[in-house]
Length: 260
Image 1 (cartoon, rainbow, N blue to C red):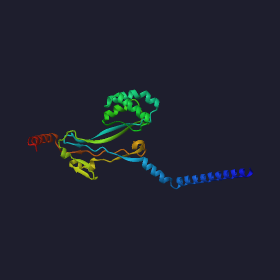
Image 2: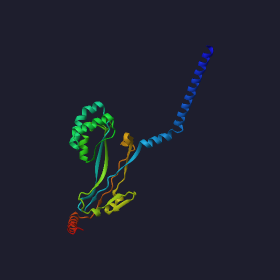
Image 3: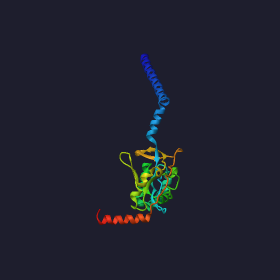
Image 4: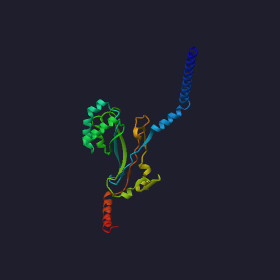
């Protein structure tokens, strides 16, 4: 009986000693990671979850001799919603009115929007697409709707801006106005005024911090180091809109007549 108790005590001491040694080993490993490799893993985690995204600047306008706009940059907006931000009470109180308002501005029906919003709230979707390619006037209408009229940290509204190039006169003087695009090899193709004066028109890009969220999507986050883009310079030309229109129409008629 005495020998049995002694064996049990020895086993207990052995288990206790093993646990103590394991605890020391675990603490030592944590200290090593924290003070010797912590910075490495923090930088690795940060690089995979947070990144600086360049904001596209507004390109300068090109004007005719009478001040008519030949080429201009127009802002278009993409609207998304972070369903995890509003409280459940606030969402339930405003979801019907919000769905009705969205249906008056965008293409889907009130019922379709209501289903999408409820599904997003249920699944805690943090980057639900509401609409894209929207004009500034539509953006302002959406920002006046329930929930969306609250600050982003309360309502969850996310607004991303894109700049596109438009030619108000259509194809008149299109080749002279030109373009500046990047090909598949990363080289720029520069044609006409857009190409020749691209360095003055393009402006200076800004930056915004974005965080990676579920689904591999990137959500903008507030950052004190955020830099707004700087608009490019305008160009005033001696192109006469009336003469260009006459020449364009006459040449087009002959091309169509002779099927050139």
